[in-house]
Every structure is written in structure tokens, then in C-alpha cells.
Image 1 (tube, rainbow, N blue to C red):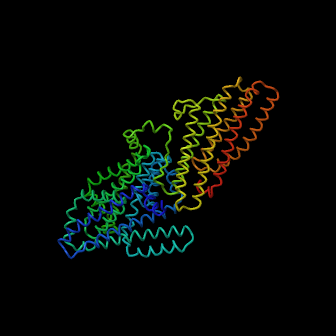
Image 2: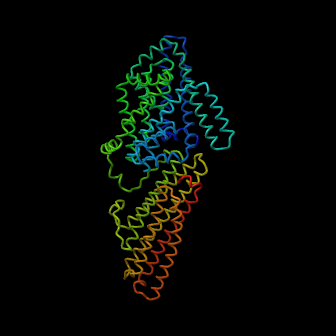
Image 3: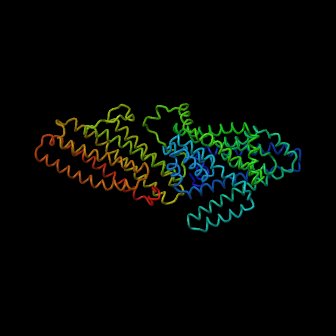
Length: 605
């Protein structure tokens, strides 16, 4: 897929190309038709008005507005780097911190839809719990109002200055930071340039009596709410819908109350993107998208029922600083979402429990089957995508630990764990199932990361992606070792006439525990990038290899002494020790690969 197409259509909204194009063409077809119908009615009353320039101006202005938001959001995300992931994983330990992390993320993305879809992705990948995501969603709703507050400043005449300054920084500065600032300024300028075009396009309607009378036909708050809902569902930008309402209110074409109704409808319409994004996702991710719709719908019912008083209160609050209709609507937008947050934030846990009860888990959600949390059709920004892949690699190590414990327990008499992923089948067959699952995940993870690096991303992120691909290959190699060796060793054990000697049994048990500890440390490294644990794995590797030499010497001494059990279990003993030695060596290689990732300290700090 072309990089520019991928960035423009998929990156912020996280939808497949076909779905996005379907909605875009629907918008292109519906908007001119509806505008022509309305303006033709006006034109028949006032033939001096040419409605074609108005249509072109509105569409062109909307395109520039959306392009500006896209460009500015992409620049701010690059500016934030790995902080988006940190805001989600570090600051969701309680609902208040989760609320403010949601404000931070949505302010950077400049899109409530994109922020919510990203949250759905984090829940899907298991980085954030469903309960914690509720506070983040409420914060994201508030953070998304920053754009409308900026729009209300009405600095249209400076849009060309911002575009020119941004263009200069982008193309004449080599520093990446300045380039990102340039992109942000360019997007900021395009946003206001689009608003300026739309404002100029509707200007002739202000002098048209027929236009004013026609718009009054739709002054009913319910019609305005439905218009905002449908329009936002089509263009997938509540800020654009609210911005147009602000322009029309500022021009006197609609009342402040009608514009606020459009804003409330737009806030419901923006949920469509998240609902579409959760199709085919896990139950947790579906709940996250639906709770977003739940919050917005409940808020709409509450505030729409008092729309008259809410509009008057917004006007009163704003009157201390400004009488601008645009500022009144912007403040109403912020107060609306802040009000929803204040109402529901104390009840996030009961709401999450209610949704879990209404939308319970299915049995298949608990089974370890050939499924992955990675969605190859909706690739998020590089930082988030790489973290999703890392989380899946950690899952592979967890499967690997179960494989090794189950397989080695046959020989060292440890109790076989109650692993529901084995589905009650025999150990050897289950090892084969686990190996196939790791193969499946390796293929998905590699394909996912290759799609990430094909985008225009910084070199350090490319290095991280390739390092994780290498790590996953090593994990797959360990699983292949277990799949091949355990059945062969099992046959040796079955045909052996004696058990291990007491000393040999103890040595195998000790070395098995050391191997399990290395694998657990490896999972800790991948669960949350951990420099110290990775270094510890490499140090332990040498220590365990020295221990292996000591155990081998002891075994050969028993063999030389013609110990009966040692002679009869020699091949089995050496095979098990060699298998565990190879696993420890692979673990050291994985830790080394992790430590060689460029600037790893920046991502673990």
C-alpha cells in the first residue's frame, strides 16, 4: 500500500482502506446532493444567488480542515514519541490518573475518534484493562475539545502565515524536531484556512432572506442533533461538524442553541469509528467501544433534556470574557464532556461490571487457540504498533514456559500444571499444539512488524521492530527444539530399565529450575522493557553453563564408576541436559538482542 494513502486514510482512524473509502465516497455523493437540494430551493426564491461556488467552497474548506487536523495530529504524535504508550500503561493505575492520561492522548491526536480507537487497541493487546480504559475514555472526550477552543480564537487571517512558516521549517530544517514543528504549524494553518473557506462560502447566505427562513425550518433542536450525528458519522470528525456549526452561528445563520444541539449530535456520531474498529476484536475491546457510545448517549439524553438551560448557562459563563457565539459553543463543548466525566468517573467500576454482565465472556475467549491480538488491517502509529507486537511476543514466551514445564516434568517428577490450553490431551500432543500456536504467532508478529517498518518511520523504531522479529525467531527455535526433543527423550525414558540415580535426578531437577527461571526472567524483560533483568539473564547464562559442566563431570564420574542407573539412563540424562543448555543459550541470545536495541534506555525509562 502506498505510504501516503496509508497515512492519510488509516493512520489516525485505524480503519481498513476499503471501509474508509466507502464512507468517503458516500460523503462525496451525499453532501453535494443535499446541498444542491437546499440551495436550489433558495436559488429559486433569489435567482441572483449562485449556489455552485457555495458548494465548492464548503467542500474545499472541509477537505483543508480535515487535512490540517491529520497533519497536525501526525506531527504531534511524532513529537510525543513513546510517551503515548507510557501515558496509557504508567498512568492508568487509578481512575484520576487514567482520566488525565486520556486528556493528554486526545489533545495530542486532536481526534476523539482516533483516541478512542487507540484505547480499543491497547485493551485488545492487553496493555490496559477494560475497567481502567473507562476513565481514559472520559479523559479523551475532554481532551478532544481543545480543537474547538482553538477554533474559537478566530485567527483565520493568519492561516497563510502558519502554513508558510511550517513549510519553511519542514523543507529547510534538517533537525527532526523542527520538521515536526513545521508539520504541526502547517496543519494548524490548513485547519484555519479550511474554516476561512467555509466561512466565506456561507457568507452570501447571511444576506439571503430565503436562506435564513430555510434554516429556521431546521431550528428544532432534535433536527440539529440528528444533523450533527449523521454528518459526523459520515466524515468521522466531530470537531469538523462542531466547527461548521460555530461558523454558521457566528454568521447568524443558526442560533447558539441549534449549534450546541449539532455539537451534542456530533459527539454521538464520533462513536461510529470506534464501533467499526472493534469489529472482529476481542470482547474486552468491543466493550470499550460500546462504553464510549454509552457515555456519549447518556450524556446526550441528560444535556439535551435541558438544552435551553444549558445554552443559557454556556452564554452566561462565556459572557465574562466574550460574547462571541463561537466561544460560547466551544465552552459548551468543553463543559458538556467535562460534565459527562464528572457524572460517570466515580462509577467506572460499577459501569464496567454492568457491561461485563450484559456482554459476558464466551468460553472461546479463555481458550488458548490460534488467535492473535494484532490486526494487520488496522496498523496504529509505530510506537503503539511495536508495543502491541512486544506484548504478543511476551505471550509466546508464556506459551513456551508452559511447553517446557509440561515436557520436562515427565522426567524430573514435577507435577504437571493444570493448563486449560492443553484441553485435557496428552502431554506430547499438547506440546505439538503449543508449537503450532507459536508458529502461528511468529508469522503474524513478523508480518505485522514488516508492515510497520514499510511506513516512513524513524530509524530507531525500525531497529526496535527488527530486534523484536529476531527475538520472536529465537523463541520459535526454542519451541522447535522442545517439539523435536521431548518425544525422542520420552521414548528413551519409556524404554529405560531403570530410573535416574538419586544424584542424577537431583542435578536434572536443579537445572530444570534454573532453566525455568531464565524463561521467566525473559518474560519479565518483554512484559515491560527491563534493562537490568536482561543483563541479569546474560550473567546467569555463564553461571548456569559452568554449573552444567560441573553436573556433566559428576555424571561422567558416576558412569566411570559403573553406576547401574547412570549407565542405563546415560543417553536420556545427556539429552535432557543438552536440551536445557540450548534453551539457556537461546535465552542469553534474546537478552543480548534486546540490549542491543538502539537507545533502549529511552524506552525503559
